[in-house]
Amino acid sequence: MRLTLPTPDEPLKIGTRGSPLALAQAHETRARLADAFDLPFEAFEIVVIKTTGDRVLDRPLKEIGGKGLFTREIEEELLSGGIDIAVHSMKDMPVEQPGGLLLDTYLPREDVRDAFVALDGGALAALAEGSVVGTSSLRRKAQLLNRRPDLQIVEFRGNLQTRLKKLEDGVAMATFLAMAGLNRMNLPDVPRQPIPEDEMLPAVAQGAIGIERRADDSRVAEMLAAIHDGPTGQRLAAERAFLAALDGSCETPIAGLAELDGGSLRLRGEILRTDGSEALADRRSGAIEDGAEMGRDLAAALLSRAGAGFFDWKAA
Image (cartoon, rainbow, N blue to C red; front, side):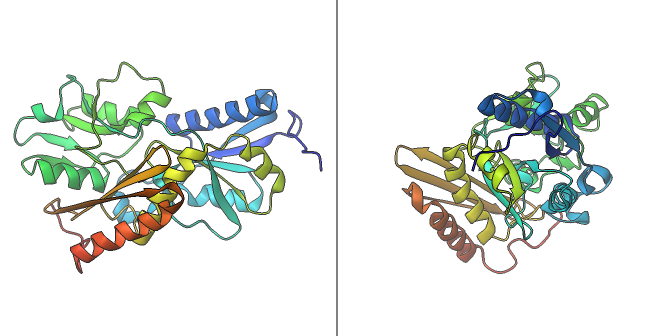
């Protein structure tokens, strides 16, 4: 059956959060679809949906819920038919989708590294003892305290512009951002020092954009297949299987990264106590098609070393 393409009169509706980065990701998705099917941008409508995570900015994420904070309202709109697809930062995505929805399309992955951001352009190693660093990420907090227990960590929520303003106001001397976000928003003037993955393993799926759809929407499935990046999907299959086996959420400091080398895949994983007092890391390598199995095996190995109560909340 011939594919029915969207038109300016009947556009395909793309759901997204309203932050500048989320909009940049939605625009990239629109541009790739328009190019794949030779359609004008007017054949796509970007629909901004405010999520709980966007509305509640005065409390740490662990106090108001898990990863669904940034997706729940968007997925409800997708299920109701108010939008046709949803564009997500994959590091925000729960490992399971609501019934009736599928997440099986990924755009080419950006730089996976974390960026250390200080207004003076300095590096993490140059921070004086006792310096204040702002972050809302439990992973980054735990990793930082594991390496630099002398530092003070303060809660630092909000979009990129909000965090930079907090630095200007002296709330903290430095913070962390994702290199992917800085690149996608084309912000070369933001002072940053990329942190090698060997020094700070990134969040699972960091730098990846995922596109969610209704499971029974064959038209959308066919369109999305044209822009899916296979290698990114292979890497995320391993990383998200690792995360799922750890029951990962915004309340657990977990890092993971899969990389491809020819026909093989290397997966590194790390879990940390919430106060940074202990970090456990390991790796696996094997055939690409075994990525998900490797993720589950790596998670089991780390959990066996961690023992009961490893992720129990401890104040730093």
